[in-house]
Image (cartoon, rainbow, N blue to C red; front, top):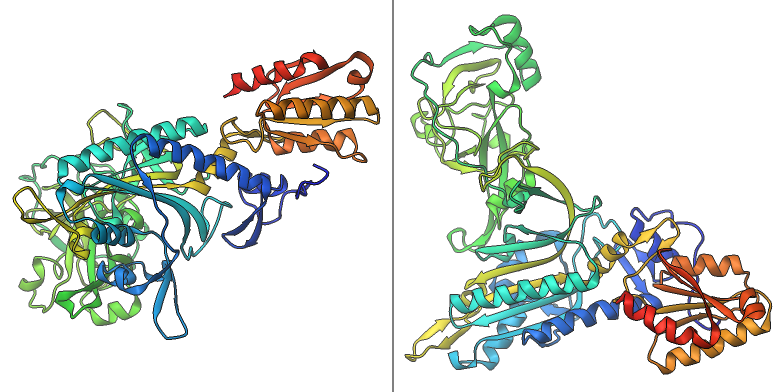
Length: 598
């Protein structure tokens, strides 16, 4: 350590917001350069390389072959798949000195597809799976949590190419099983959850989430043990409700009731229910107006376009914009703006109803289309109080299916504890997680977009079936640090630790330093990686603190007992086992202990 490029910190960086970010900086593994951008120091590189080694070993087991693409990519391939526009502001775009457009690649589907297109032409060439481990770039609006959500990060992305869907499913299962082995070896806890494909496209997707409170993803757990990403969660189909005894709907004046709270207060004061219970938010239907920003398509002259849609949701539920956006993918959504409302004066804020949207729009004599979609919790035959499309008035006894209809159903509201699971096993519970990997059955999206075809057995040109499989390498490293630390510092699993043994020579006795140096030589001859704290003018207390902060699995202390009794202390970093061993037998015992920790 006297020559190691390392400087540990005693205090947490002021802007570090999670434990992994604090400890990786304090222990000298990384240094922050700018929001979401980090430099890697020697110890950090060692850990990162070991994570990558585990990934490469498991990829090799399933026959995947490694390639490497440039990070700087031309516009044209992303234009062909429309992702140049679909990514919006989430990518770094720039021009070269000749005015040509480039981006820093957020992912490389296009390049993988074009490479296989360039080299393969027959079904006999398939199947093949290729992968890379490389830096990616995304212009995150709010980088956070250190390495968990950065602007530059290391990612492993693999792609399978098969002649048919059956081959795709086989490759998908092989990659999925490899992911389990990778995360098990790395000591990362994970949950496999059903997910939505989003901008990636395809028809099947699963995420590997590390269950951590710092995560941005919420996943739902069913009593059966199955799990879903919230965006992928579907509401069990609702049963029709008998509305035969519901009176005809009628408009009533409700002055000053532009919010659900004010409407409930007004109804309870002026319109008591016949059944004697109080009006509640769940009796109301609120109509939420969104703007849908569609990517360019051929029907709109190859230009992005915007539409207005109204979403009907129960008044006691909040809209979940991420779930709603998943339903509209690859389009993006946002709340309707003042300008949108100016273009649609028929939508009266605070009192929007059903009479001028969706299927009812034509009957109201209005031109154009405003889609009207009902949240999945709105059952056919359900009875509501909702806006009357006139200021300061609402409609009572509005029955869905009798008095109004929608253009379709959408998953729009926030899910909550107690909601029923899609598999029918009972009520859901929820946890937070960090996405560390995801697998997609892409299908034919990129093959069709980029013309990746091969000749089949009959000489017919057919598109190639693709799968996509990603692991956030630096994010995984951060999650390992989140799972494996205590109040003293990091506590790396043996598979990724920068060394297997941390030997420190403590005190002023030359015998301790000599014994430590001899032990280091013996261990290195046996292939054991060692960090040796040989600093002469550093106190034992500082050395102990640094050893605990760096987090190597085994700590060996040569000190006063070494000089007096000829023994060294061998302890596990987690404090689970400590023993005194004679110097002559120390190398054998350390090798044995290191093997036990693997």
